[in-house]
Amino acid sequence: MRGVYGVYIAVPFCAQKCTYCNFASSVLPRALLDEYLAALETELAAEGWAEPPDTLYLGGGTPSLLEEAALRGIVERLPRVEWSEATIEVSPGTVTADRAALWKELGFDRVSLGVQSFVAREIAATGRKHSARQVEEEVGALRGAGFSKINIDLIAGLPYQSRESWRESLDWVERISPPHVSAYMLEEDEDSRLGREILSGGSRYGARAVPDEEQIAEYYLEAVARLECLGLRRYEISNFARPGFESRHNLKYWRREPYRGFGADAHSFDGRRRWWNVETAAEYVERFRGGRSPVESSGELSPRQSMEEHFFVGLRQAEGIEPAEEEWETFAEPIRRLADDGLLERGGGRLRLTDRGTMVSNLVFQEFIN
Ligand code: SF4
Image 1: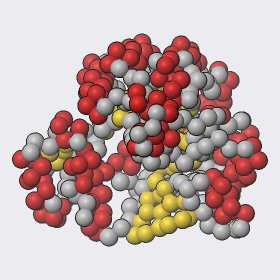
Image 2 (image 1 turned 120 degrees about the horizontal axis):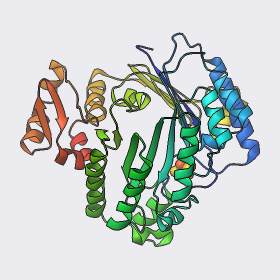
Image 3 (image 1 turned 120 degrees about the vertical axis):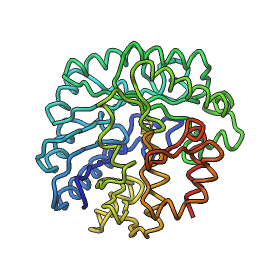
Image 4 (image 1 turned 90 degrees about the horizontal axis):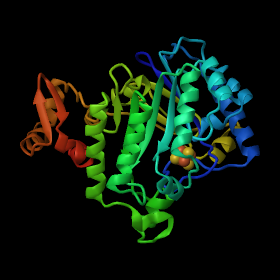
């Protein structure tokens, strides 16, 4: 590994499968969970930890559902370091004062709450069960346990969302006042039930009540302006924070710093090489049963691929990137064209997306991929 690296651990189990979810998570039987945790502990125990990591992210899935013994089993296999940031992903409805105290005791100092919406009809349509009041109470319990680094996830584009209901969710954010918010635009792809329904023209899961692209863009822009007023600056396309509350772990992904992933579908990067584990919990367990490595694929990046990544990952950040001389030369043509179109701006040796470029970021990024 080059530089200080982050650790990501995947716990791909949930109490329900949300309609919009395109992660490799699912509701799995207890026996598989036990086997998965045993395999995860084996993978962690086999790690040499040649250098100490500095950030931890326990994601999923819903790791907040894990019982104390399971959480301890994971944390005890990690090196004993002073984490500069340790995040646990939490679903609303799973926070209690006791659990919050346990997470704190285990070294977590940041909680990411997958709220997505504060509006009852939208929440119900996704298959989730929390209420806005419950989120408020649970944030209170987290603060009572000493957590100040709290993130709330929101999705613009959920079924039945309107400008008014989106504002209602933003009003709740203002009332709860977290120092970090992630506001994503709904992804309509084949990997979620809702995405498949929309793409096939069906009506299940509220697919016909999904706002159109222009409305979703409008909601996103409203969130940018509103969160800015609340002192949460956009530092990445979907991420907003008060100064000093940016996610140190997630910044590693956009800055292409090293990280090591454990568990199903977990990805790793050492600065030159990328590798990742098999996608599902069942395949992951199967690999360990057979005494085999969970790694599904790995490869060294070519110099060209590294440059491309620097652009399409790094440009996600509001501060943009500082291209090397060779990168300015290699991408001179698309940079000039995108700058002429008002989608990129240059200055002080840096390159960044303009506000317009941010709205069509995927099209901009395609220009840097061979
Ligand atoms: S959105 Fe989160 S809680 Fe819902 S199924 Fe996906 S990983 Fe689980």
